[in-house]
View (cartoon, rainbow, N blue to C red):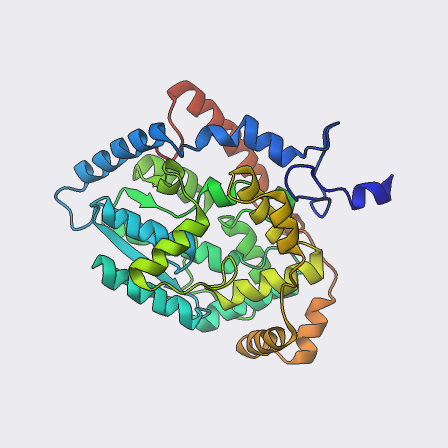
Length: 382
């Protein structure tokens, strides 16, 4: 029975038992597909209803920001989702402050794509350059911790910088490229909350060597109470209110701004590219193409057969892997021997370090109660 479970794959998407928490019904349908149909899909409006809702959202944003320099803020990484959002926001007639966070891992293509978008849309761009010595120390600390989600140091500072600039510029509406069309499915067991500042500080205290003086953290109180209730900020995902097709979005970006494709999701960051396509599969057996392609399957952008064929393509060819590995190791100030030792450390869960996971679960229960009573999404637009 154990061997059967180990290799079981959903009959609809391509999620399998590399997700230790996956379950299947009698028809071989996984819990991710069931959750999409029963819960997630209700938050997705790629139709006339979405168009109507988005029109109301845009009207509110413009009304609130009519006497301000900016009426909203967007984060621009140079990836497909944020790039497409940027040109759509321009077409909506909004006036965003565009924030890019340079954590030291931008690919040359990402820099070029960002420059082309800003020029095309005539946006004001603020680039937050992260203190390299600090984030390098934090990233190495995460490698030493042995936990799965090595992207947290970057993810946290991206959100932190955007929220800080929103408050500084009296901006209430935060627009992100997050979307259900390409990100509806993601196993909880593969990651932990990037906004858990307590966990970040605990891991860095145990394995880091420098003080984090310039790396701005956002605590749970700020993220779940201060920003949404005191500052009345709203996080909006406009791509959830339109028929967003990733392939068509790429084609439109290429035609309008000469956008260059990275060949894979999140290829704009050389850290994330190497982490997701080498470190994570090797260390934990997690292939992030599975949830990504599964999301495209349930949203109707990809067939299961096409996804299976895509999985047959190697994550790396030998030359590219050699170059990326050399760059990754050298940039972090490690030797090849040190990196190999890190690859063979005992694996750990983030829960083995002080964290706010229990608070998060309690907050989600309170959030659900408030939403059911007020019919308003907590910290999001409804």
